[in-house]
Length: 147
Image 1: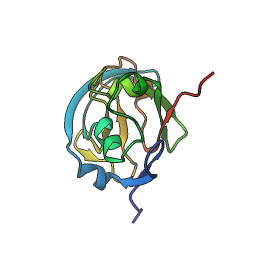
Image 2: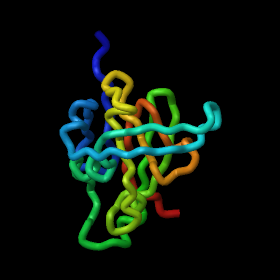
Image 3: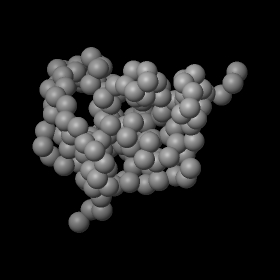
Image 4: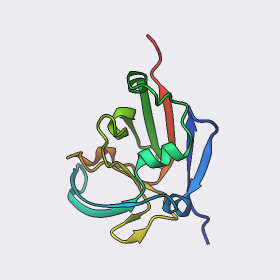
């Protein structure tokens, strides 16, 4: 039997964390019904369940000062899939003080568990499915470098 997939949370955290899909299910979960356009497979409609990315990262203890707001705006998230697909999000997209989007690390799709393949990044507000990363293996959090 194949061992369950893990997702590594790293970067600007107290310490890196590896979680299985089962461990992600222990966080508060939400359900979303989405439709998006996939360049290779056309229109898609799916139901997903899993924790918000916000909740996953807050549980991982990010090294971010939450007493103010502006400093949070310099943080980015890089989400990588096992197949090399990557997507970048801003912290403000998931932070309830800003966009507060319901972006999930889904643990199931259409009722089927994702334990073996790994969680899926779900961005319900996107019309294009390019940021739907399957088999998420890594989520990096970090500030934009001063240029």
